[in-house]
Image (tube, rainbow, N blue to C red; front, side, top):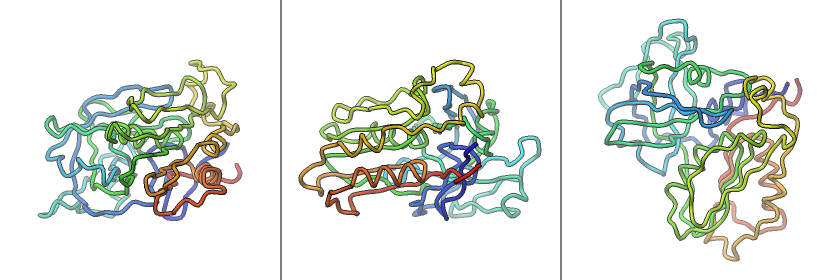
Length: 299
């Protein structure tokens, strides 16, 4: 069975494609503010995704589209006690022990929704495939469970009139947040790859950016027997038509008016960028590719 491996500094620390047990290659840290969080509730979004709504204090510094990601702190072993970081006078996280020795580890995630007034933050998780610390935490989370985040970090899109947003399920939270926020006059398209029909999630409606779904295993029915088996859901050898779809898109005549954002599995990202940019003189400063994770070349 294929499983992700690291993309240099850029990608994954887990053995399954979660949005989140992934480190964006573009992650930087203009701020590094630490916020303890507790679980309020969880919500199943699809057979392969769930959402945690978390509560914390003073979340306003995270209310920015310039930095979409945070470092998400979770226990390594859910059965053991954890020693959580504390914040110094400037709000930065301070570890009492080295990471791992304190039974706490970090993964990069995208903030899907932030309600500063209510002190709530939503983070979405891909839960199929092999388990990692963050997806394990998400599946087992109960109201009152402790976690934390620091940041914000990571790059976002540049201002444009036309956007192409594309990626696999690990990119869903970032794409959804962008659709919530981009001006209504923007045009373009959104292309998302998931494992099979029935694994789509409800996406924000944007008047100029319709969403199209692509499937790695379009012949698989959306049945409980598949959804209830994470290993079965992850054993997918199909390739979607996402790269071909991107190759057929009509780009704006003036590249400075457009921006391309593509994220997800390393090889998918590489194929998508090659297909979308083939025979086009598209400036590299109008493109952001984010390799969230990578499959191993062999079993």
